[in-house]
Length: 338
Picture 1: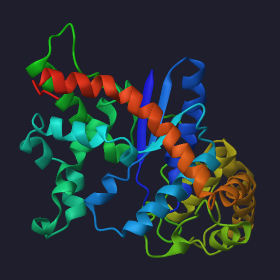
Picture 2: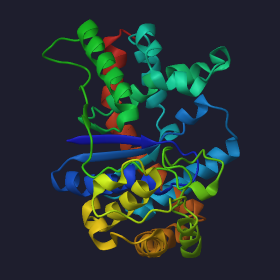
Picture 3: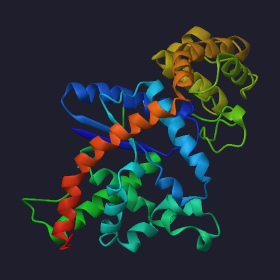
Picture 4: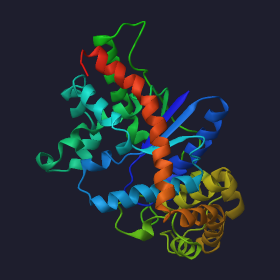
């Protein structure tokens, strides 16, 4: 089993990233390592070029997110942790796969439509073709499984389409060039919503910092954000069905249940009939208990640029070695001399 997954270094990790992906990365790291498999986790800095960015911020964010991932439990000795830019094979394979990807396939990608907005003619070519880079990210390492959320399933299907067509066009059924990766939806992956709007996903791009719990927040900041989180005046119900139509209440109870590793019904069994004046302090204390150690490790590591760069270079060296056979085979089967 070989798992490959990436995250854009666009700023500090927040609660949604942690509960939706990173906590499950840590669990997979431990399970896959025990089974003799590999986990590759990368900072998708090449993907960041698809949108306007400040170069100095990209460098700082790549290091900061490396520190956050290590603080969350990603072990550079058990997993391969690196940033794309240190492994040029990602960009090379994307170009080689551009000859196989079809415009019709890319035209169906809904995220381009969402991110480009109304003025698509001014969007970068990188924004249009980045799903091909995503395909290269996983095909390069012969990934067997890729953790995906609902918003990325379409892109993994594209990667499979590209791999299948390339194999059909250039290889034999007995010796395919690329493995077709399978999606993996980790159990317990949570969809965390904004603290200011229960109908919107928690996001780094939200202009209000009060909308999210950052993994870099200290205990006082976490407690303050929980206290000021949007709620409604009704008491908590006795069962999950009573949360329907109450998005903010549902979000806060869901966060509590996920961190406590219990069901929503179990949480409501303890707080049924109580208002948020009782629930919010309990939630804040739970967040501080669970996230406090992560914050402490992050603070200790975030400014140690030498250590962070060494972690990324060590991972990149492992990634380059794993990528070379696939890249060499792709060049060769396309008839490219080098």
